[in-house]
Length: 209
Image (cartoon, rainbow, N blue to C red):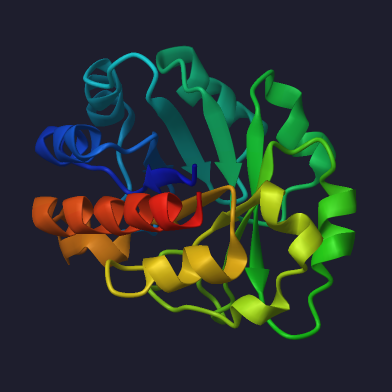
């Protein structure tokens, strides 16, 4: 079964809509430049609404060690997600499983990236857009993903209810990740789009099983 992460949660009603629709994981952005950034008090309140067996993920972009530890001191996140130039040593020092985001373009050696971040729980593959660290709404050529990496891939980048079924059929990733593709506006989710996205993924899983 393809796991599903809804990222960029900023409101409790969006969190509950994602959970009700069947999301496996929820992402909270700790990056001030993002329109989906959440401050610690807001994020802590949201985390209290996450039910059992739904994974909470904290997203960071080149944070300081102190920042990550401060967030973890206030929020018992399940997984960390790093979107900058963090080293494997940096990512692995917090006592939490982590995902390493790789911005994909021609010439990026994903097999080498997977070897470098061998202790990561998975690689989150996103589109490369100059100067932007994620949440671009842009997709990339899924043919650049080696088949042998699919079981470690969290596929992101420009996914939405109308293309996610094709993405799952093509890549067979471990999980898919969506943010802007299920939004009414930046940082504000659309419950109907979330439900449609998750339904598409589950329908493909049934067809492929």
